[in-house]
Structure formats: C-alpha cells, structure tokens
Length: 386
Image 1 (tube, rainbow, N blue to C red):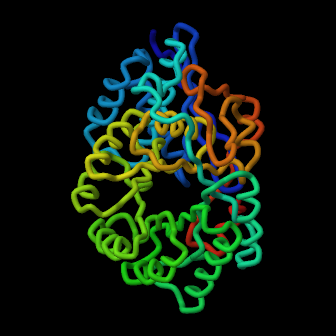
Image 2 (image 1 turned 90 degrees about the horizontal axis):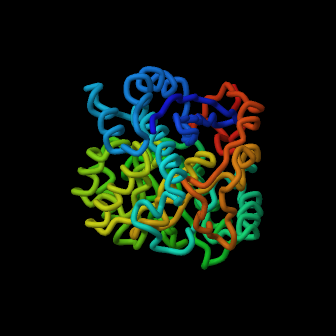
Image 3 (image 1 turned 135 degrees about the vertical axis):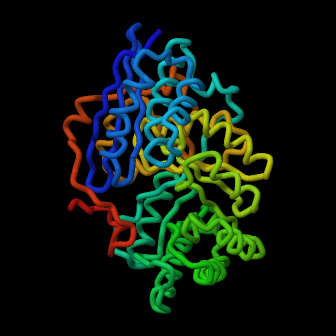
C-alpha cells in the first residue's frame, strides 16, 4: 500500500481554525488527521506543501516509525511546533489507515485497552460575563450535562502580576464555581503561563482551600526551573501542577522530568508528532510517577487520537474536551466520536480512529480571520473574529 494524495482542508470557527488532512492510498483506504494550530494554520500548510512530496507521497502508511523519524531528522533544522504539528497530522492519518486495513481500533494496535471508559473534563463552558453569578450558573450547566470535572481560567487577561482587585475577583470566580458544583466535582485551574513565580505561588495558596485537581501552567513554559520552584510550594499545599501543551519534542521533556517540576503532563498529540510519540513519552513519564492528561482544543480527529491513547495508557488521568460547549459544526464535521455520558467517553469500537469525516460540513465553514489572544480583554468569550 502507498500513499498517493494528501489534501489539506481548513474549517473555521470564530476563535479557532481547524486544519484537516485527507490522506488517500492506492488501495482506496482514506485516513484523516486534524489539529488546531493556534494562529499558525498557514504556517503548517506551508510546511506540509514541502514535506508531503518529499516524505509522504509514495510511502507505505504502515511504516509510521520510518516516516516520522525521517520527517524529524532529514530536514536537519530542529523540529518545533510547526514541524511537529505537520508530522502529527500525517501520523494520525496513517494510524487511521492501518486500523482500517487491519479492521481494528487504533488502541488495540498499541497494546490494547487498560480501562473500559475514558474520563473527560469540560472546557470552553464559561463563555459568559466574567462575574461570579454567571460562572456559577454556567458551572451548574456543565454538571447537569453529566461532567464530573471542569477546567477554567479565572484570571482575566493577567500577565506576570495581578492587582489586588483582580486577585480577589479571580478567587471569587473559583469560589462561585466550587459552590455551584460541590466538593465531589474536580476543578482544574488553568493559569495559561500567566504569572511570575511569586504571583503563581500566592494564587495557589489562596486557591488551595478549594482542593483543585491541578493548577495548569502557572508560569511561562520557557523556564522549567521556575516551574520547579512553584511546584515545590504547590506540593506542600497538596495541589498538583500540570504543564506541557507548549512542549513539542521528547527532548524538551527530558529536563522537565529530571527537575521533577510537574505532576501531570498535558502534551498535545497534534503538536507532538502524533499518537506513537505520545505513547512513548507516557512510558517515560511513568518512570517519574507522572500522569498524562492530553491537551485537546481540537475537533474530531484530535479528540479520537487522544481517546485511543487514553485507552491503552496506564498512567492516563483525564481527557480534555471542548466540543460540547463550543461551535456545534465541529461535532457535525464527523460521525463516530463518542458522547460524554456521566463524565466518560466510551471506548471506540470501529476500525482506525473510528470516525467518518463530513467534507461538506468543512467546506460550509471556511477559514475565518482569527487572532485568538489569551491576553486580550474578555478572551474567554471566544468570539474574536478580526
């Protein structure tokens, strides 16, 4: 079997453009990949325009290790977010093809299931006025939908520091959410790399009474020693630290593990070279007793890639999901993604990724002119068409 054609397609929403690729073979099998390259869709398309003729066309989709290794090494320049996203798109489409050819779900080709359902958490649910009253009601709606965990960033457009007024407002928002959902629902506090270590540790101390399941990316991702310093304080307070969505190669994770600077890694499969790369990283993480909670702000393919990884990964914790709360046409672009029921995805049972893409839906929603800026006022409303 050989890959004959790779076709990129972009589907727009008011805050995220999703890049799909359709990979066709000479035996008629078709695989799909998809990612949300934040504000960099055209850059990834540009990379693919060069890489696909060089590495992908004519390649056997079963030889995934060879394909991804060559894409990382043979261009010589260091791989970063753009390259690793392009590789991931091709890689997950190859797994989709391989699973269909063998009539098996992807997770069964990677060691088989170690759990019978996949715990999910909600994100994108707080697209409301930034007040305790509005967030209280929005959080109740999440729990009413069956979720038992939800993530949110209460910190507005803060960076490095917050005013005392903003600190108090952020704490009030967390308190409102906690009051709405009760003590048995997990709260995951997103910090988006906003803070210097002093502010991060102050906020963690103030929020520890709500027993968050984690605080995420408390400091910017470039300085892992600063993250280690924050984690040491958080650990004393019994608050886990999570990070990793902006780390794109296995080599960058080496220092994170050696510093013991995190409790949970949130690698995004779609920006990390794909499912197999993430499976390998999870194995390394387990030697440090680190859990895995894949970052996922994408559509059906990225969600299914994460679900397949979760099914066969022993140190998996919980899976992020946006698409019950944002942009209904994203769900409409594919059939086969399990619904979240009582807080869990069911295991996929169809071959490959297990989904069928509706190209007409993608074409009906062309790319939008979007600059999604998490440091802009009211960014959380996610209605940011330029």
